[in-house]
Image (cartoon, rainbow, N blue to C red):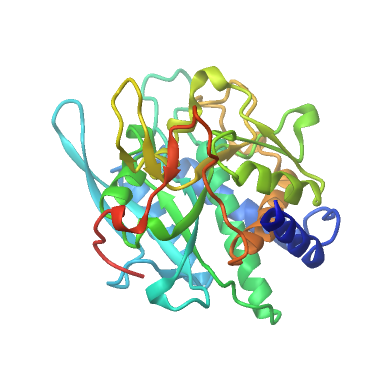
Length: 354
C-alpha cells in the first residue's frame, strides 16, 4: 500500500487534474497514422502480403522519425519469423520493435513494454459491391496509433527538457496476431531482451470506437490477476478517465490477445491445475461489442479521433510513472491465481540485446 501511495503521489505532482481536448497537432498526427494503416492501399494488412511488407517498412520509419532506437542488437527494427499455414505453406511475418532507452545501465535495465498488433485479415474476394478491403481501422490501427502517439508525446517531453525515463520503454508492433498470436509468441521464444526484466506489458487492442457513455473509458483483461489494474485506475481517474474490469469474462480474453505470451511464459503445472511463471501483461480496450469486428465497415469514419488521441496523451503520463523505479507491478497472491513472477534465471535465452 505504501508503494502504491508513493506512485500515486508522484503522478499527481507531475500532471494536471484533467487534460483538455487534444491539441490540433496531436489530432493531425493520429489522423495521418490511421489513414496510412487503414487505407485501401494497405489491402487489409494481411501478414505475408506485399502491402503488409510496406506497412512494416513505414512503421520502422515512423519509429526512426520519432527518435526511437532499434531494439535488436544488429541495428534492425525488424524481427522476422515464419508462419506455417494449415495447408503446409509458409509465409513471412515481421515484428517491428523499437526502444526509448532509459537511464539505467544496459546490464541492469528494466523495461516497460507497450504493444499492439499491426496486421489484419486482408481482403474479401467474394464481397458484393466495390468494397472488399478489411481496413481494420479499430482492429488494430487504433492500437498502433495509440502506441505511436505515446512515443511522440515522450519525445516532445524530452525536447522540452524533460527528464529521460529511468526504465527503458519498448514499442512492439506485432505481426501475425490474426494467425494465432504468432508474432508475440515468436518474441517470447526468441527474445531480444531478458524477459524477466520486463516490469509490465500494456497491450492496446481495439481502442478507437467508443459507445455512448463509454468515452474516456477503458477496460482491462485479466484485471484481477495483477497489481496493474489497481495501479492504473486512480492514475487514469486523475485525468478524467475510468478503468473497468473486462466486461466479457466468459470469453476468456486475457489469454486470447498478444499479452498472453508474456503472462504465461512458462507453464509449470498440469493441464488441470496450470501455474504460469510470467510477466504481468494485460490488454486494454474500449470495444463494447459493436459489429465492426472483422467486418468490412471497420473503417476510419467509425473512429472517435478525439478520444483516441486523448488516450495516447493520458497513457503517456501513466507510462512516465510506470517507468520510474518506485513503480512495481506484481502478480497478486491468491489461492486461485495461477500466475507468479518469472524469475531472472527462468528467462528464455536471448537472441540479441538492445
